[in-house]
Amino acid sequence: MTFPLANLSDVELLRRLGGSSLAAAAFDELYDRHAADLLAFARCRFSHIADDLCQTAWLEAIQRHWEPGDTVRAWLFRVVSNRGVSDFRKTRKGSAPLPPDVPSGDEDVDAPLLNRERAERVRHCQGELRQQKPEWSEVIEAWLAGELPDEAANRLGITRDNYYQRKKRALDALARCIDPVKETNP
Amino acid sequence: MTLAIADMPDDPAARARWLDEQLVGDRLADLAAEFSGFLTEGPAVSIDGPAPHLAQVLERGTAALPVDVLQKLLRSPATLLALQERILLEGGSYWAALPRPGGLAIAAEHTRATIRARLSPVQARSTARPWRREAMRWASSFAVAAAVMIAFFATRDVNRPNVVVWGWSKPGTLSQSADAKSYYMALASGAREWYDQRPTDASTLATRLHELRQGCSTLILAEHLPLSAEQAKDLKERCRKWAAGFDTALASLEAGQDPLTVRTEVDAIVHKLVNYLETQSKSA
View (cartoon, each protein chain N blue to C red):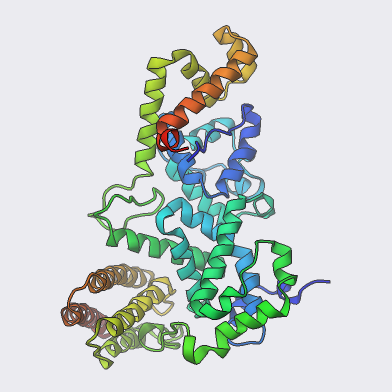
């Protein structure tokens, strides 16, 4: 048995939000289709306000702000993106950068950066690892470069078990270095 | 926070599938940052390029990419995020079938409950439920449906969602069948409705300002069929700036600034935008 709403298009579902007796079920169907991906999109770009942005987009959908020309899904994504950028502009004196794929559209917005702080921390910790544990670091570099474990172990003159041991230790050390809070407050 | 990169498979052949799962997940930004830290960050990669890479990726995943392009992709955070958007919007059945992180579904369910709570605080408490996609359609049954319908419609008078019935959000204002001149005039007329109410207290002004701002979103997201591409682009760009002004005003209001001062600032923006729209109408 198929629930009839599952056969409806997004636009047909959206129309049913506006007063039909199926409004609640139509909303659930529409929400099930798009909510998780919309949230993933928001979290990858505006992590600190992702939930709020999604709520806003859905509330605007319920209020039927969508207009023909976009798919409902694209429209939801655009609302999240526009609202996120708008929030960034409002708080641009703070530290939150625009995601790199979002054009600033404004000359006075700094060049878009991606979670620069995390990238720099990674770079710093990798440098530390190179200095303090070069034998671990070379395993990580082989792994990142896509070298197969057996080949890398052979090249480095270590056993396969050693390779995995070093890789694990290196990743643990990097994780502790990159997110030091975990070390003191597990 | 764990390293997003930590569970990357050793076997390069298995990496494409792993990357695909990251592309539909919510830690892609962390992953991209880690890649750009570990690897030397490269320029944006064109996956739209001469080879039909993008179409193949949208259909079959990143396994469709040549190894060198895949490696370049990992070094380009901007391309990874741009690709994510394309995949989430245009990806085919391969992408739809990929598992999403469990935490994402739980968070989405929480957001659903919050939306209901915002529409009807009393009803929402009785409708919260765990994330089960199929169960959501059936197990929640009539009680949930009825509760939400009440939230949407029956409580309209007391808990009515913030449906805006003036300005650019008013149905019909953005008639896509008008000519450019009438379209601009209608927009100017919609904007002038701001002056129809002159709230003096912070709460009412905030509501009014929020509605005005909502109109900007409507305008920014509209297609503007009566306008040329250039006119539509210019209108949207200006609207983004007006919206930023309204956002700033709202923030000032929420920070405790005198409502009348804020209202005067907003009046000035509205005055400017009405002038612009009227000028455009005359020259259209």
